[in-house]
Amino acid sequence: MSALSAASVESAAVTESTQQKKPLKPCCACPETKKVRDACIIEKGEENCRDLIEAHKDCMRALGFKV
Image 1 (cartoon, rainbow, N blue to C red):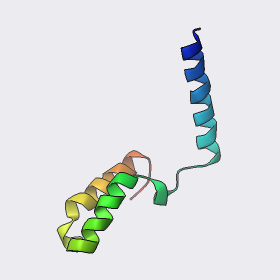
Image 2 (tube, one colour):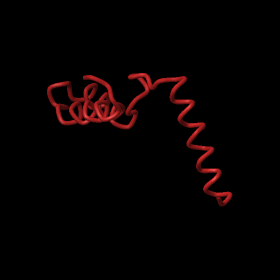
Image 3 (spheres, helix red, strand yellow):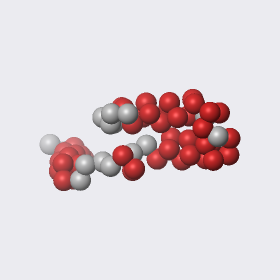
């Protein structure tokens, strides 16, 4: 096994063990869609940001959250 692929395997193992110890919290998931959604709601109101709200929900669902 090359040094590069060995490092990749070790990195993947560390990432997996870290994820098992600290599950992703809903507040920390999808920061890119959350930020845009929140800014829109503050500036334009919730009723005018439905597409951004749905995009954030889709992102959360993709990570396994039930919303």
